[in-house]
Image (tube, rainbow, N blue to C red):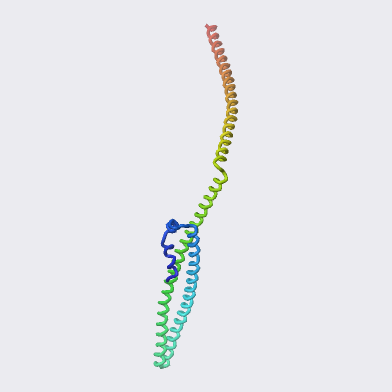
Length: 223
């Protein structure tokens, strides 16, 4: 077929390996995408022509079939009128039409195979094109990321970074002092609560002791 010959290295190869071998992967992938898109247009244009040829051939086959049936009818008419000579001639025309119809059917099968091949080529190339576009997006993302990191390094020298770290450490120390002060108040509050709890326990013990003494005194008086 020849339409696809200059792209077999792309269709049959792994795009990653092609890019790995390229000196300028970004430039190469742009060229690959452009050529793939141009070939897709070419293959689809060819497919459109073949589809049009198939429609023409289908119409021709219908006409041949109608001709064969018409000549068969004429042969029957002539035979019914006793004109075997005319019937024989009509049957000869019918046979010629049917023979041409067989050739057209063979051509139709070839056209169908051609369309199947074109469809396979379009599908293969579309997959490779989608893969190439995905790789192009990945390359652009990597380039943008690298440029962003480079810009950051250019804007912030090492001294500025150290200064920023020191400011951050001072801020952290300030937060530590503030949190320590808050926790010291919490500790004081806990001590006060513990003291009150001790007073409550002492009061309960005193009450229990008084109740026990009263019970014992009551027992002695009963004796």
